[in-house]
Amino acid sequence: MSQRSPLRVLNLNMHKGFSSFNRRFVLNEMREAIRSSEADLVFLQEVIGEHKSHQKNHKNWPVQTQYEFLADSIWHHHAYGQNAVYLDGHHGNALLSKFPITFWKNIDISCHAFESRGFLHCVIEIPETREEIHCLCTHLGLFDYHRKKQYQMMSSYIQKNIPEDAAIVLAGDFNDWLLSSRSRFAQPLGLLEVFESVGSELPRSFPSWLPLLKLDRIFCRGFKVLSAQTLSGKIWAELSDHKALLAEIQR
Image (tube, rainbow, N blue to C red; front, side, top):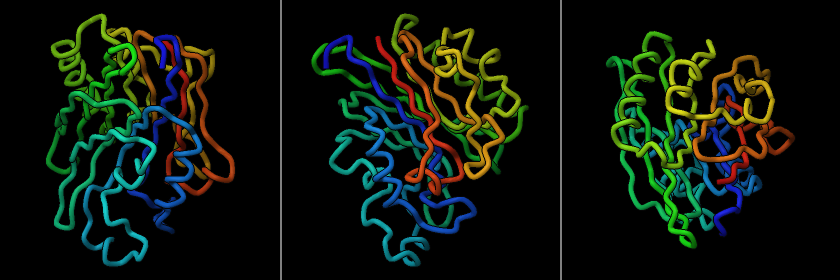
């Protein structure tokens, strides 16, 4: 990859590998769909790291973790941040990368005991150029009061731990139906929303069967946005309760 080659970035809240209303376990179909996107970086939310009951009840439950199963032979590098822990197991955020991950850390931004939230910070390195890119994958709270606190916690972390001139890709389920993430969080950090950067409206991503709410986001810094789209069509129709977002960005 040369310094000017674009990056394809996919974001998906994968609903723990189940279709809307938990009708079917669709992890196999999800893997094929994600492969078809030809993404270099895949940002995932609601990824199950372990679930003992599901493993017993679903014959096609993978032996490895969900993120390892999805990465397979395409994305040789991956990281997982455990957020919600329960008797049967745990779930959280994950990054799949075609480039080496040289650093990763999971940061807890939970605001109360009943809703575990966090963001995963990874640094990837482009081998040909030795350039570092900071990748952050997040899933924010359901209530605006808590999201406001979480914006502050993420902003403080970025300002303290990521150089001002560093390239950033940040994606996730922001639960931002009030459309406040840009003014409260992104603009002060110099982050661009990819759809707005190409002159499009923010995507309606939830629920996938009748998208009404604009919950999911891809932000970047230090990149030119070449394209941004909500993935649709037969292959994506019954995967998760969120739509997948795909952007092409270039340094």
